[in-house]
Image 1 (cartoon, helix red, strand yellow):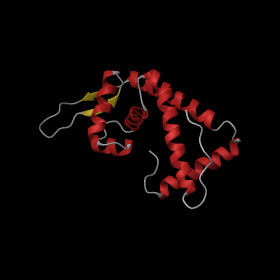
Image 2 (tube, one colour; image 1 turned 45 degrees about the vertical axis):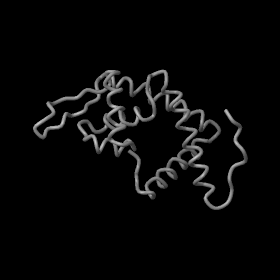
Image 3 (tube, one colour; image 1 turned 135 degrees about the vertical axis):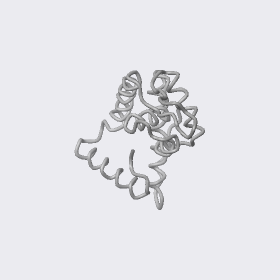
Length: 150
């Protein structure tokens, strides 16, 4: 692990800091999910699918922020883990529906606890009222960039 240099200042520094933080948080989350044979990509797809069973491949890929091709590999891994199953017969214009299995819901809960642990470490020095303000601020920023959470 390298020691970070001084934080950037000036125009664009907040955007650069957020990008740096995003990369670092993703690395930490991926490390926390590794014992579960998951990555952030898998967790994202599983979480979206749990909230919207039967969603189309293209919509799920868009919500998870990945390509349809990458989603296929992601779902294949989730199926191997027994977390996702396809229902319905594909063909004749019908698309198989994707659903989270009971094992997938348990895996999702375990994974979400791992992510919460990363968040707890990251926010440890921030008082609760400031955490709430940070959350509201970040949600607003994401919304203004045109892609609201979830």
